[in-house]
Image 1 (cartoon, protein in one colour):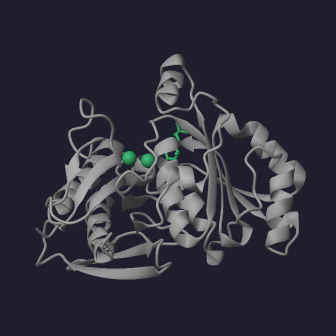
Image 2 (cartoon, protein in one colour):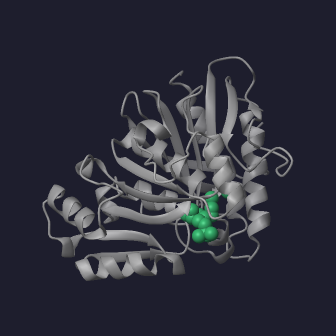
Length: 321
Ligand code: VTB
Ligand code: MG
Ligand code: MG
């Protein structure tokens, strides 16, 4: 992959964040999602690559753009797999809450997991705890392992968990172990990435969220030297059949970093739509708007934070063609 694609991806997530942030707190998650998707799609057409969407907005018949299988880019340049979530956290934006992101990950063609749109059980940690977690171990064992790896007590460990009834038992186990919990309404991609940044104060993400989000978060953690493990959680026969089609017959099969992203390179970009622990959300300041983006590349290990100031006079529609 060309490293110059790194900067191109920033333009993509910035555009999607700028457009969807206009919908903050307006109670309209579909409109927010649509704004992000349309902006993201428009910028992709300007990028020199031959991209194929492998994680996207759905199948061709259900999503008008950024559907799985869609070809992106000018058609010149490297062939890449593309995973997008134009707006990760549609209800976050609708409510004006925390940690909505616009995200994209690309990797060499054929190297990203084609995860179906279903649930996935996940456990994710930053670099210090790599190799210490095991999705099949008990909650207590994992928390003890992370505490030890980070030279602190289990009581000091902060676990991010999606606030869902399905996590009642997990939450009880974490409390019993004595660790602290950050319950989030949505946004487990941010939850996973935050584990790799000390300043967020978060050590581990646990629990069941979307499988597509799992692949995107794994690509980010690959760039950051972190780790995610996952298990698909089909909830009906149709989903179980989809797993079988992917070659996953044993539903307890653990997906490791190399299953999520089998190549040695990936590029990941995320722009904050609403404020989060890692990235500030979009701010509109009259004649300009500001964005914060993190962009990183697995091969080089470079992580960059990019502050954008966007002229609303020169780019009134916020997306430059
Ligand atoms: C999570 C969350 C996402 O989907 O993956 C969640 O991080 C899982 O689905 O932001 P449920 O809402 O059904 O629990 C999102 O909320 C949306 O993609
Ligand atoms: Mg989405
Ligand atoms: Mg999402």
